[in-house]
Image (cartoon, rainbow, N blue to C red; front, side):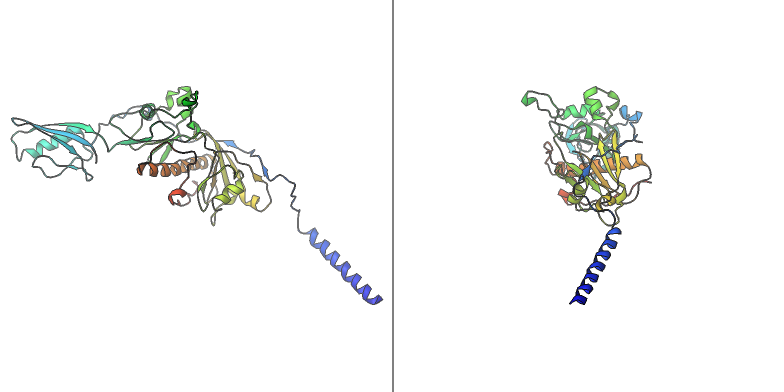
Length: 369
């Protein structure tokens, strides 16, 4: 028995030594009392390369041209005057008198009159025709979000941003409750033209009267003013479900998890958090990979933060910020444009989903180099 006790004692001692040896090489232990998330301190202001161009502040000198859906009045003058209300067809053609379809898409009213008179000489001696514009449907601007009368408006001539907002009744406010507080979030309002976000500072325009922001709109410009009551966080880029998440998911890890987590090959060490106005954003680069490994603390987010997971490392911070702002604006425009196309153009709600509600998952956008 004595020998057996000695053997057991030796085994126990060896096990303790082995345990101590293993402990020394496992690295630092996780401290459950440590803060779960830290405050973001490395936000950097960036000077955008996107600036208002001088020509945007001048009315277009181009004459109005016809397109599908436009309505014109055509009258042939003579002994037996005749007037016809004509709509330009989806193929850009009009039909008048005995003439076959004439393609007027892209023609001015004067060019349309000349085309009609030239073709009418086959049937009428020295025809004289008048052409007048009755209604426009081919050239429109989109005014959506927190404006009094959100919708799609015809554009018959030069129109400034302020004139367009006035046409939509101005921004919504809480005047019914005895105040004039804006219900539109001017810091995240934007204009998209040809897929690009224009650097318009709505706060400077509407609250400070900065007319340098009052650009002339062009056909198909998209103006959007989100709700100031929104407290969501926007998660975009290389995640499984780009979307908005509630502010209750107020840390970086929980926000990305709510968006389905990062997709394969996402570049996790350069995850960006954009905060502030779209015209003057601040950006912080966070090593999300280190956070999920426990090598760095999680990061607290704020309402309306934009989280962007890239598919490649950024090279120029300014271009990275421009990319994120443009991606955000296009994502919102897709959703709200789809709502408008479905004739659901009432004031936008507080919770504006990005991409996911329509089942559209955009391909991850690579970072500009």
